[in-house]
Image (tube, rainbow, N blue to C red):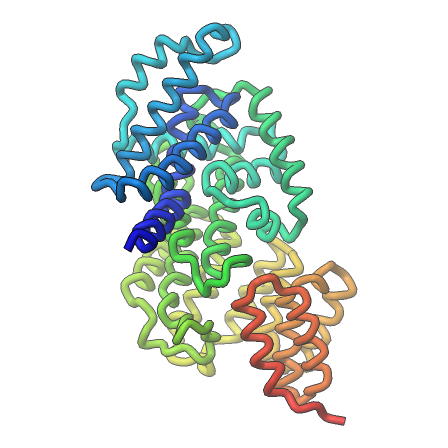
Length: 420
């Protein structure tokens, strides 16, 4: 029984780490100042560690969120009291902060506002773009170094360097804790980061899970904050990203069967969530109010075509291929070209798509991505070229880091019979 209680405490703490970490850091940073964000992170990490120990010993409190915020508040007060002799080095007077911290609140409106401000703090123009995204994923989303590295298709060493550089830039810039009047490119970085968060939930790179719904829901919540904030006037991209995430989230239940990932052409469309689909389409319609086209709008429209088609076979592949061609004029990346090969194969044949993928390999580093080999292997299987299919399945397994995907690839490999 005690082991079960310990496990429940660990699971709940992990949940709050994902859902409350960024909120807690944002609220604490409000009092310590942006150039003490590392101290804020330390306070939050100490709070979560204390939660594990305390909840295991005494049980989970009735209001675990309030418990976390009260504990974080007390840690913050202790830090400020210890720093009174260093007043000149701190952005606020510790005694003044003592009084303000009495109002330390768990009000959803206040927390949401502080988190939104923290997003734009991390996107200050003095901080490099890669460091901006890395800071948001680490500070506001609670990503591990490994998860961030996977999101960027880079090494943990590179991410560590970006974090060190970003935190130094954040400290040196003395940034005001507020949403800037001219959000400019900052909004693009914020949206890009939240989309990475959603993608990590939609297709986890590390944990052996099909979907991490907590990450996807957190991503949607963060963009909803942007959509309802009056400081943001031009909201076409915000609505487009919401449309994309809702339309993809509508297929969650159909993506899993008996703990196994189900590919789209095998999904039971009756399990697709009509309510989420309608919400996505409503947001997509709102993007037409502004005279601009974004990559999120195109991707959401593609997802919309998948959602409204009566079957996988009857999907409007020509329209989707046209949308990918348009997307390439906005953002020409190896991953977009890889995804484009799916509708290309449906419209112009597998041979054409295979040729495009081989050419893509010659002009990029897509060779190191398991999805490249997985896609090629599927096209070769459809062409009954089992030898080449086997070769690329083996390469896909080699480059894959998630046991969930490795299991799927190995199942396909076992079904192949070599042709001599």
